[in-house]
Length: 243
Image (cartoon, rainbow, N blue to C red; front, top):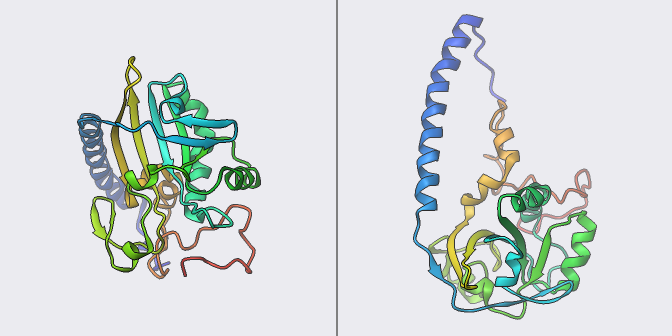
């Protein structure tokens, strides 16, 4: 932490009020961005997609339940992985307790990964989560929504992730997608966000941004390298899979 600049109470209050004006402007900009996001055109999802769930097969439409809106978190968990991505696990720690509140606002939230449903169920139990988690192992959902790529695409930097060609450390990527349905049972894709677009979910970053050291990630090999599965903090034997 850099040595702080210590001032009088009056000078501190002046500086704080100056910053408050910038914070208010950012809030107004965020409100406008939210409005534009909600006004994006929709596109009809032509495929029904069938997912493996703990109680059998469910279509994309069935994932809505009684809600008219659906959020899907694309959780990084490849078929051969022994545990889920630690960064996605941190994200899931945030939204798990919010699912019931989302449902009260006409929004269902489901997590989708490519790992077999038995693997997902076991990991979900280990982490103590209660959200709805289904497997897309037997469909093209992850490919179609830009979160699963081939080794060749990764090695050649041809991963069309976050609407641009590039590379990512692994072939599974994180994201979140929004869907809506109408009374005729038609499903529409309304929005997707990837990469730093997921920071809106990470309340821990909002809290870290309030303290002097902030996120303190400048010297790390990548953002969120400090994170761990919540049952592994303090265990020095844990190996970072992305290091």
